[in-house]
Image 1: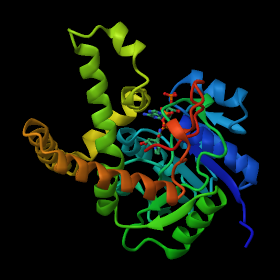
Image 2: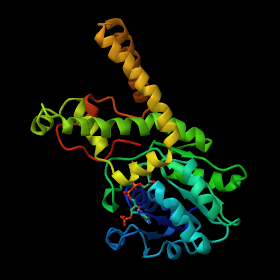
Image 3: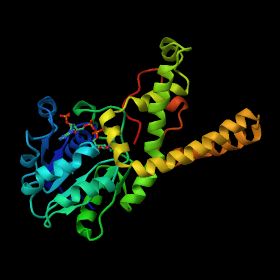
Length: 314
Ligand code: NAP
């Protein structure tokens, strides 16, 4: 069934996710007009130059006026303040959603500000790259990626259905789950791997017996793939860990135990344990490829050229 376009969508934050949404909304004609807000004048000006919005506003409260759909595309830690700022100008009946990588904390911060006559349906597109800012977006970012919605108990089913149809029109597949479950799942699929990447890259940079020159020169090994993750926006990731503290800390405990088991197997020459572990791990990679969530080309499809911002992250 054809998607019934929104009259007006407001994008609050025009970085990677906000600008990608703008591109796909324009391409698929999912809204008759787009209004936008970003914190800095530089981003607001750039968004206008790129045609990401029909109107850009210095104040988020002005951007959301008359909007049927409001999407908060700001770092998780900024969602509460933005919600407070827009509360009084939201249109009755509007759907308010977000794209934050953590859900329970966003719900805790945003819900208290939502008027009774709007529908708050939190969301998270599992799609991204290590790039940020208004120039980094592209229309196909959400294609064939999952978008998770975490409606609250009592959320209007029609609002959830309308938002589901919107994300599907953006090319995504949609799943609905509890916010706490989302945060546990994402702590293993996204937050822990990202933390390991930040850690390994800084550890390598700090090594005294290997010079930074050599770390960079011989980086075609696994290290290079970690540096791609580690290039991600520090503000976004700081907010993820501050807001998904419990799930990440629990998982780190488990991760450290498993790493100690591998350490022990290496120390005692337990090749069988290492082989079995690596065989299981390799099978997971195969399943991700079969699920269409990555390419099976060697070296992730790299051709020796700088990587285009096309491979999913987060
Ligand atoms: P981004 O490229 O860094 O863009 C963030 C945008 O938010 C910018 O336009 C920024 O404005 C604006 N902003 C920041 N703080 C603000 C504030 N206090 N008030 C108003 N605007 C503010 O970030 P992104 O990658 O699009 O991430 C946005 C959200 O998507 C985050 O919650 C993140 O967790 C989630 N997410 C990210 C990914 C990913 O891979 N990057 C994937 C899925 C979900 P200025 O440019 O003026 O500072």
